[in-house]
Image (cartoon, rainbow, N blue to C red; front, side):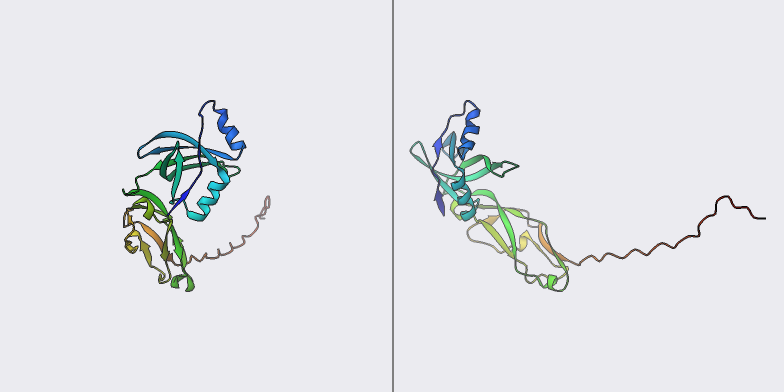
Amino acid sequence: MSVSLEVSKRAVRPRSLRNQLRHEGKVPAVVYGYQMESTPISFDGQIFSKMLRENGANTVITMDVDGKKVNTLVHKVQTNTFNNHFEHVEFLSVNMTEDTEVETEVVLVGESAGVKSGGVLAQNLYTVIVSATPDKLPERIEVDVTDLNIGDSITVADLPANKDYAVITDGEEQIAAVVEAQVEEEAEPAEASEPEVIGSTEE
């Protein structure tokens, strides 16, 4: 699946133009990659934010750059620490017929049997690397933990095979495990000692 984003070419000098764009609600960005020289662009920040929320970071974004249709993936995103607004975005132009590798979020679903028995579910891996043509990249990979009992775990190798993509991350990487809940032992109160009398003399 792909979505369209309206972009405009932008000047790179002076640097103050970037701040002016941000003040106007635009995001300075750059697109480069397959059959595409590095080109500075800008776009509406709110539209881009809504696009990511509804489609995920691995969706193919189609844009028109100087009359040329370019299929891209979001490569890097810089956000403002204080207001979480987009500061700068890098788009990678891709060949729709060639495999590409990206990070994909891992999401645990279901309530494990071990948790119901008093255990604790620990997630150790939150993303994996997958390889696929751009139109087949998954937005997320859901991992069902319903059958996990205390002491059980799921590794990357346990993920079911998918015809659309291949998981590249090392199969031995542990995604999640159910462990016993740790019970803190109450510390025993220290025995009160006899007060020392200073300056007393035995006769």
